[in-house]
Amino acid sequence: MSVLPLAGPPVVSAVGVGLHGVTSDRDTYLLPQHWQLHLYSYEGTLTAGGTAYAIRPGHVSLVPPGTRVDFVYRGRSEHLFCHFQPGVCDAATAPETASLPVMQDAGPVAATLSAAFHAAIGAFGRRPAQVAAEIWAALWRVATLPAVPPERAETHPAVAVAIAYVQARLGQPLTVAGIARHAGVSQTHLLRLFRAATGETVVAYVRRRRLEQAGHLLRQSTLSIPAIAATVGIPDLQAFNKACRRELGGSPRAVRARAVLA
Image 1 (cartoon, rainbow, N blue to C red):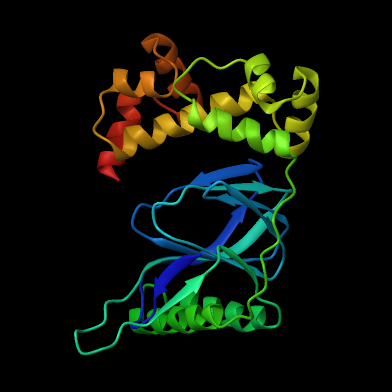
Image 2 (cartoon, rainbow, N blue to C red):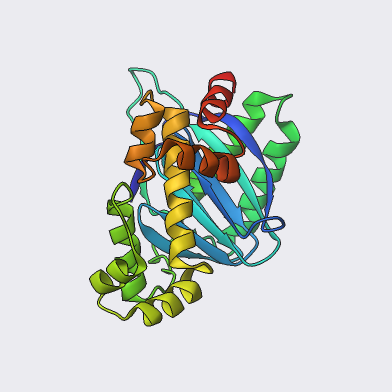
């Protein structure tokens, strides 16, 4: 559960229609200062805070700032999104908050939420007060949805253990045999389970997570490049440079420079 302040209209930085799953079957996002509100029209998986949730048409998710979010798509996937910061109430106003889960089924309210999103999209860039009002109303509707436990995406326990093990040891040497041993299954069985659950091999997952973490540290921290390379388990700077160029689209220095200019 996340506690969302609702006493004042939010400050909306982005609202629109997101189209994914066309060139890649997965995305990762981490917004340090903004909440993420999504209304879905597709099926997939969202992982936030280490927990995987099933995405279904009509579901709505709310992710607090600083939370890493991983999406897995099943082909062309479209959703409505809003990135915002909660409004600030004055000292005379009693703070109003709502405790909300990451994922909810909006049910019949989904149509009303969609209308609010589209009204905000139409006004974005021209009438900021209307945008804030539409999203504020949508947030209150999400806050008053019936309390239904969110549907969790099914993940084999061995895969969950393996992923947690990798996450905790990105900076250390990792082998498929060692990960399988920790997960309590054979190497062959882990490979089969892992591909079924994530769509990729264990080695590809480890490589992707290391480079995603490297990208995050390059953009968001002041750690030196050698320190970042060591932190993500690629202490060979030449290998780290090649991996960044291949996975992040540029050298470590270039990735950091783009973040400074953004």
